[in-house]
Image 1 (cartoon, rainbow, N blue to C red):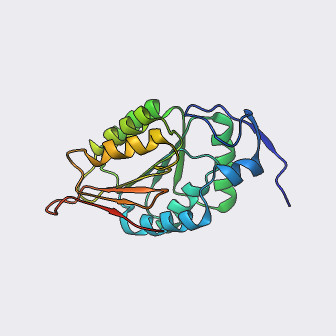
Image 2 (cartoon, rainbow, N blue to C red):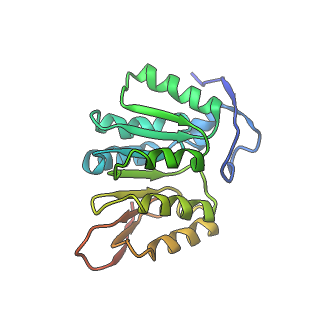
Length: 206
């Protein structure tokens, strides 16, 4: 049955290309904004490999990607940030109904919440950057997490090819001094900081 609920979305990022109204059907958000199953399973597997000791997600939306990340590593805390209060509340409801216990939904702008993540004094194992597709913002968020990452951290950036702006952000990120390898899957980009390897940039059809 189609979900006929609606939610008032306060979009702090660049906005949706598909949904122009701030009053949106939950079914439309699930269709256009939620991570597809193919990539959800990829996040699940990345979480198992890289998640510990902390997983961070920027852009909770309905909490679907959060649950993929959390289900793979139930012993690892997942901190997910959502700027829209109504969406954050809906995500919390979905997470409760799924019975997942290791997700903390943080409601506020990314710029407000990231300093709270930094205060944990933990280098995250996995960071998933989504929810804002403005070039300067994405580069800034990447820099924030690059600064607290170690050689075991993986940063995943969603929608790197969705616009010229995002493509430019991806190219800037690849040039960061700490980066030792990247993988371009067209939709997502992976950034590694592994020490002792020759800088390489891969492109993979996925």
